[in-house]
Length: 283
View 1 (tube, rainbow, N blue to C red):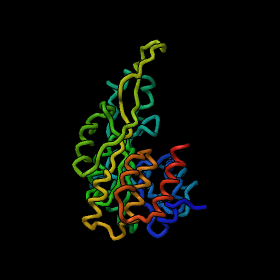
View 2 (cartoon, one colour):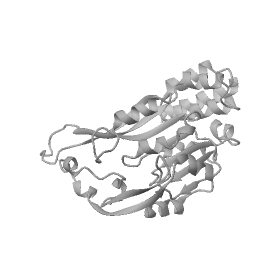
View 3 (tube, rainbow, N blue to C red):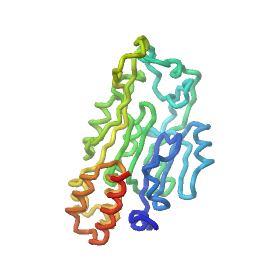
């Protein structure tokens, strides 16, 4: 039996851009079934090939680097492909920690980058509901090439660095200020810590906070305000998409507030959503 979100979003799928999509779309979106339109960006050849092998019919997979403008950019290829970046690794800092050799630069690649806005237009995608970005330091540059998309967005998951892993890269404060000024609230950070190479292995410390995945979303107040401004033709669909984001990230209190304050949803819809949420909480 299809869940309420699959049924509600069949005609207007949930549209997500996954930038730095190596490894594929995360499981949290699987409950949307075919009622999701994922647009996956991955410029690295092998990772792109792996995405093509396992993609579903409703996926759009694009081998393109993104930036704040259309420009040729240099990608520094590291020994571990996943840490390659448009910024050079800060080895003076990285050498303090375990496995620094993964950041060794093996070569350079020159990429014809474009903005996210341009790429969506070329693929006839007019709006996004959610953006996930993990591009080793260039996240802010990509967001700056997405200016016209923020009004419609419900949330952004973005990797942020608290230490300068790459020389000259924007840090958490830069990314945070930019996104916050667009009307989004920081709700969570999944933090990653590194330990110094010389510790003896028996110290139960976290290590140093290096980076994390930060979740920014529009609050229930912002969602309701958008509706009151008539920014969306289909208010119910917009609310349903916001509810799915809240529930998929475990922000049940926000979902409850929308359910309590929304006059657009029917009593039957609210009952089904509460049942879906209850099943999620039990897992």
